[in-house]
Length: 481
Ligand code: BG6
Image 1 (tube, rainbow, N blue to C red):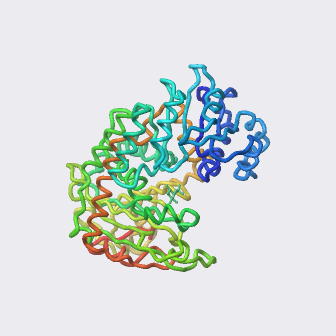
Image 2 (cartoon, rainbow, N blue to C red):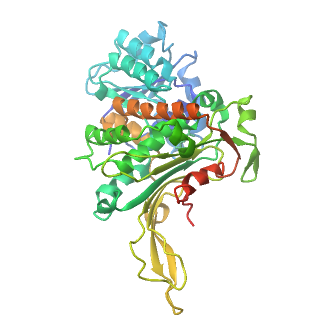
Image 3 (tube, helix red, strand yellow):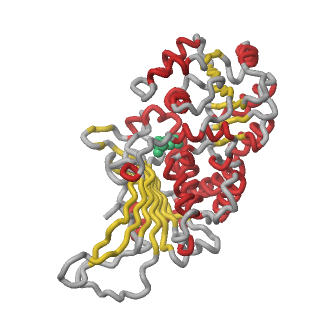
């Protein structure tokens, strides 16, 4: 379904994010016919170059893509203006005159820039009169480095844009399977009655990557896995699993429920940190057949930044009292795998007394990527003679097998959601700040507790201490066996 015509001004258009994600996403939506012909993309960045040069460079990430033949038609909708996003440079005037004054067109500003300058760019947008009453702004994570800096950024952006016009991206909310989580929970009767402390033993959320810090080492080394992944992506997943049913999928209905979860997260203190948090950093190792450097070599010095973190989170509310949420994420792990596992309580009494096979609890395994799918693990009888032999098998919904459609990448979906004004897929100010409050407490606790940084070889599942984190509670990470 086509969206309304828009002008999208992309600041930082020559940067990695814009070239790798934003432009290809817009191009793919264009190829699918979702972007009306009159829409325009106004790319802006500091470098002095022509639109042709800009497009030539942008093409690198389109080469070989489906619909490559539509590239030149798409290019007609793109122009490049050199602008110093912070300063007084003449580019601002050029940008303003390039904008369509038509009120029927949506006007969107995309800041693919370092968050530290969000405030000054917003001030410049306002000072040059570029924002109209209906215009919207899109911000990338991370919004700040901690609660305090996030608040300053939010304040500054709030001077130029109303909260309802601010779209803070967490690209995990644009993933197909993450959206399906809402459908799974709220469009099926089956799960909700047991989706609570009476039915659920615990929840595991794993986001494992094979990538290292790579070119982003300068940013990453100041952030670490907790700030880079847990504060946003993993907490958002936790919220979608844990929140109460919203009255509708309208933006504030969903966001209010997520906020309640974030506010109910128990703040971790130094004592809980000692047993409930594991920090790790990868060393050299093998990813598949490829030998890769350790984190220290990649960054160029030995630092104490964590590239892996596993922790136990508790939600102090009625529904989740006593149900731990175990979160873990790491770079340079054995395989790329993002998964949510809801482990249900064991049956209250073993009627079967099987001759063979262990009685295992039901698990709902939601695979976010790759090989998107949903599995419900059940106990069944191994067919045939030979007594009661139990087998633990999946009811398996594999996206690749069940659906033929090619679904859009997270950025494609989110950009179109901005044009539509669908705020439900974006983080509200209070959510981001609540997530930072909890994250800041985690960091303060591990500093006070003097937590060790455990090494793990690249290409493994992280430090063995992460296994103990769950073993201590009599549980283990579910890796599909
Ligand atoms: C980003 C993080 O937000 O998410 C990166 O900054 C990480 O460090 C990326 O690699 C993971 O996204 P995806 O979609 O590949 O799981």
